[in-house]
Amino acid sequence: MGLAVCRLVGQAQNPIIHADVPDMSIIRVGDSYYMSSTTMHLSPGLPIMKSQDLVNWQLIGYAYERLVENDAMNLENGQSAYGRGSWASCLNYHAGVFYASTFSATSGKTHVYSTKDIEKGPWREQSFAPAYHDHSIFFDDDGRVYMVYGAGKLHLLELAADLSGVKPGGLDQVLIDNASAPAGDDIMLGAEGSQLYKVNGKYYLFNITWPRGGMRTVVIHRADRLTGPWEGRVGLQDMGVAQGGLVQSPDGRWFAYLFQDSGGVGRIPYLVPVTWEAGWPVLGTEGKVPLRLALPASEGLVPGIIASDDFEEKELGLVWQWNHNPVPENWSLTARKGHLRLSTGRRDTSFVMARNTLTQRTFGPSSSGITKIKVSAMRPGDFAGLALLQKNYGLLGVKAEEGQKYLTVVSAATGVPVEMARIPLRRKIIFLKASCDFRERRDTGQFYYSLDGKKWTEFGPPLPLPYTLPHFMGYRFGLFNYATLERGGYVDFDYFRVSGKL
Image 1: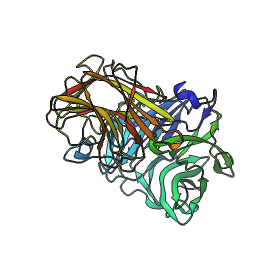
Image 2: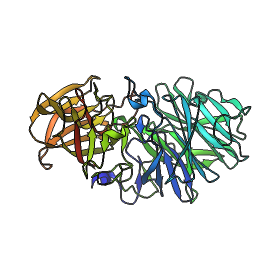
Image 3: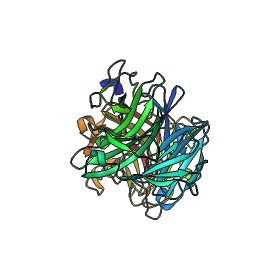
Image 4: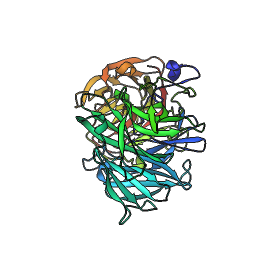
């Protein structure tokens, strides 16, 4: 049953994806939908997904391999890009060209990627300073190109026709002085996450805001002219489902795509049906987010954006992303056929500052990941294994110390890594498993080991899996190997297998 255990046959249900896919931007070109999302400090980044039905999504690529070359993205000189990297993207299609744009405090720039073939690429990059916060790029009917950006006070800026930067002498004005106002006077999060549309000659702007003591809220503004005046109202206030925009199906139906903060699994996508009344989009069913949708049923997350891997191919599957920029010479799929080899290229003092940790999403309502690892080539001081990556991470792995190897569990639940369990290991091969229970926000992990891949032994205490802002993403499964004393050791991962069962 796996991932489909809670799904009704023949009918889609919310959340559409029970995994960390925040800040979505969705477009439809012909009969195909395309979606971009945020993956921050991971590489490659700015993922592009495709669907034929708004429910079942497949990863088809990334807009960039490496966002920028600097100490933060390369995990050098004590710097990192956790919780930063690239943020909310905007996906567009105009005159035969696809555009995916994002902004980054790590680079200090706004990045615009373009391609004529969104499924095969290549992507061309243009960038310019500064980093325009939560921007939305909009191609108007008269051929002019604009950007809406900001938080609370929203700005309208005209771009050069080729999107290479701001248009000299172009339009530059405050669009809405206080876009949060429809949600009240006491606001904890100023309206941001702009998504701009033109429907039947009117302009519509979607934003997220957060009234103090309340929940994340959708605010919608509309205007007859792009420069205003704008009138606004609350578009949705239910379950904290917010931030996103509009998409229309080929048969004329409208939906809002939004996400919800869902604890340790991350920010998860919802679809909400939209009707139109008196020129306004009306979200939900009587103001509520429906749990069932008149769309095809989900076929599960596997193999759409999460997948098992036997490492038999010449290239890594698209489901994988490195924690920060990888070092190519320290990983290989060919050094030992059918295995991922992670080699140590320097000494590190902590897991989160180590390079070449290979990750993919955990998922809900429950999930587990299993790997088989050969550890005979480890050197003294090496630590390798399976991780649950977030700020309060957990590690299950093998430590090489003073001529001996130990199987150990490390928990950073307190913010400081603490070894929670240890036993001697006298084998060259060990099987490791991590499970995640996100049901009803339990947000709990558990590690296991096996000597034969069949009989599993629970190892270490349950691990709390809280969502924290310093990393700003859901927990990720991670395969890691780093050195603390000397370089040159390596481990071989035979496979990584995911399941929707604990």
